Image 1 (cartoon, rainbow, N blue to C red):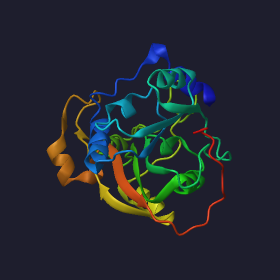
Image 2: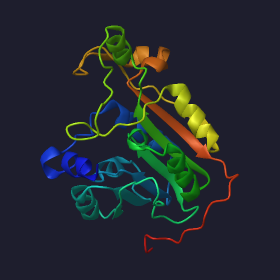
Image 3: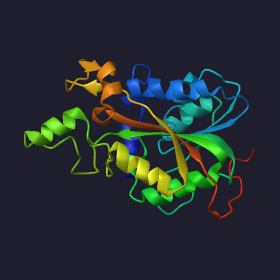
Image 4: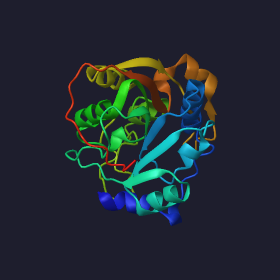
Length: 239
C-alpha cells in the first residue's frame, strides 16, 4: 500500500489544489481562526501547497507525508516535515499537547484503525486545539444515484493503483459520532458542493448549503477536549 502514495504523489502526478472547492473551504476555516505564532500540522501534507496557501504565514508549519516527492518539496518551502506512513500501530512522531491546529484533509478514509488515528491526533493537540478534517461523503448525491441505478457508488474494491486506497467511508452523522467518541467538540460542519456531473463541472454551492448531506465532501471544524490520559512521547521534530 505504501507504493500507492509514492506513485500517486510524485512529480509526474502533481495535484492541483488551488481550485478544489474542499481545499478552498478548509483554507477559509483556518484563515477565519486568525492564528498567529501557532503550531500547525498538516497530516498528509503532500508538497506543502496547502500550508503555503494559509493567509497568515506567521505560524510554525509542520507536515507528515508518505511520499518522497512531497517531503522534498516541503523542505524547499521550509516546512518542518517528516516522512511518515501510517501503519495503525506506530505513534505519530510528535510531542504530546504540541499543536494548536491539525489538518487532516482526505486522510481518514485511508485508515484501517480510525480509532487509534483520532486518539493520536487528540494526544498531540493542545487542550482546545482545533482539528480541521475532511473526507469524501459516501452519501453524496452522485453516489446515491449510482447505487439507485445498481452501479458501484464510487467505492473501491482494491487498494492497489490506480485506486486511491480508500477503505473507510463516512456520512455526516457517522463522522460526527466518531469525533465525539474521542472527545472532539464539533464547532461547525461546512458544505462544499453538490455535483451533477462526473467531471464536477456542473455543481451547486447554494444547494449544498440547503442539503449538506448530499455534498461531495464532509468537512468539520472540531476542538479537542482533554479528558483522557495519553502516553507520553518526546518531541521528535528536533525543535
